[in-house]
Length: 426
Image (tube, rainbow, N blue to C red; front, side, top):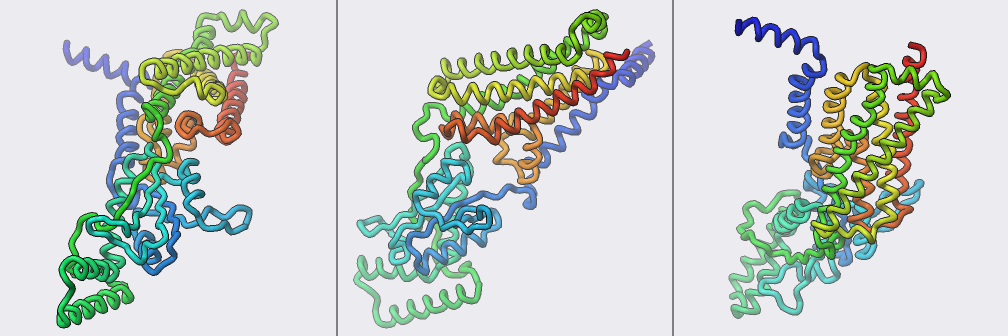
């Protein structure tokens, strides 16, 4: 009897393609996605983009830049990308800070004038020259990585400068070298310079580790926000659940097909286009109301700065709700029954959310996954809300995200209308 019950259940599972997909396809798909994200392979590790501003223009600053460029985990930008074939000027401290604010890079390094004359400073002092590290605090990993790499590069890219500077402190605090010691020190410095010119590193230089290169870190984005990451999570989680809500709301169309209500509606003066437009409007209204509730909750409980960003929120909220509503209508038009809609929507929405940034920040994903995320509604919506609540950007700066979301909504609605023709002639 037990075997008969098991056999009956297996036959039922095989016939229910939606349940079969959720049982086997969904786990494998999610495993593959997160294996790519967290697999740890060097070829998929995302590179950190760093803006480098050289205000010193010395041999030391050039050596530091060369050492940073040699790091395979970094992408160094010394000037903005070429615009319309016109070469752009090199970054200054002001333009580098503006670029970090605009999200061009999570970190900018500003090497001040005088760095080459005094690259290290044991114990501080008035002559201490400090590299400025400007960061976007939404990326918590990049600044720490760059700070550590700077100390490494200082030793491997300019050991002769480090040693020469160290000898100055010995002269100052220990009374100087004897002639024999001075001669040996000069020989060592010459050897370091020859190693550097020949492309060798300084593994056997004998210099110690530790923070020999002074770095001052300063937040340029998010420093004055009470709870800076709340806006990201509100948008990320909000968009994912909006997709579920829209697909469920659009499923009412399938219920009307199953109980015969749709035939009676279409026999009246209501056309299929009008019916779909009405259901889309309902989905948009429902999705936008959910967003309002979620962000108001974030404001009341988690101190999100909501009311100062209402114009941007309304623009992004309506654009996102429109795209999400059209997505729900497409799913309803693809499916034959309400039973098919549930498994299909779950599968598609969870995949979109995993690669689109709702479950894991896209900037920490491999580059290929970041590009794949741009195929989802989630990614464009999250980017837009980030501009509004995190970067405090004005409304005109939202045009890429708004245009994409509206275009996606229109395309999905047109496809849904085309697929819905089968109900008109059935």
